[in-house]
Image 1 (cartoon, rainbow, N blue to C red):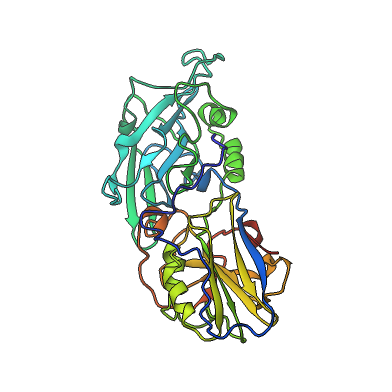
Image 2: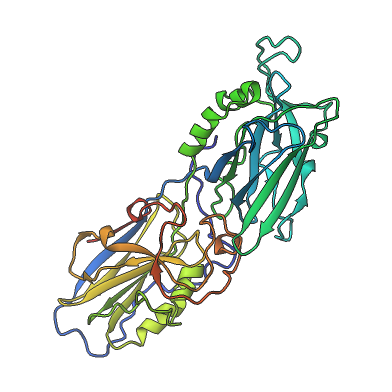
Length: 406
């Protein structure tokens, strides 16, 4: 599987507009105390994973899915993503069902969800590790079984919930009464992570016309998913890009960017949390009397492994606050929860939390069709600003962002 981190070219169409990169001092009376120039650095330390979501399925009465039986599972996806699944053709030596790479197409070219019968997308593959007649070991590349029409043995049906951006796939074993009647083994499925321009793994599970791997071989020969599940678990996880970071130097006790437990003020936090656009909040903050300076670190999305910095000017008694979008969300942002003295030096990540702006309905991070990552617009909601909970398996703050002041 592809392990190399791909550069995030953009969070989505229209994600960013032009950013002002110079600091702004809106206080006509200069700071009475001597000012000092400092530097703040925001680093994306998230680990890129091949898959945003994965899982397994099996029959309800027993693990095997017999002719006439069906199984369903639910997953999230945005318009650039596909679903890959695999299950053994039980009455064979080493055949398995799966779609073409990178998986079942879930959205049409106009970005509309595909629903209903998608059986035409399933294919039957010969793993090439056992002779189809004798069962003796052989070493051939994976190839499509050309003389069996997979869609006559397996019916696939999709439904879609637009609010949650969740699909449900139902797999029906329709092989009964055919010349290829067969049970299906327990199976696996996965949705590849999307980085704003391409999938991180565009050939999940196997590569056609190449030699097989131990994980898909166990499925094709024995219907055993254990090795594949272990590999999927190790390579599945939520990742994200970060937007340019807005940094503000201010006086007083109130953080001018947000107030926990209060609704968004309409000054521009929503635009950062939903689109990564700092322009509106940057302009709004300049007009506040207790704000001494507004700065922006970076002018493009920050991919895992990258960082941005900006100098800022502050004097004794000043405070500093910052905000950046959790890019693969509908309306989340990172900001300092604790007050930070502008004279603080070192790693201040522990003072940072992940917040929900309450302005857009949440979907699975990195797999929601209304997220800016996929060129979408969050569906509106009106809730107070709150900390992001554990509804989704989001990595801990320190595993995504690192904030340092020098």
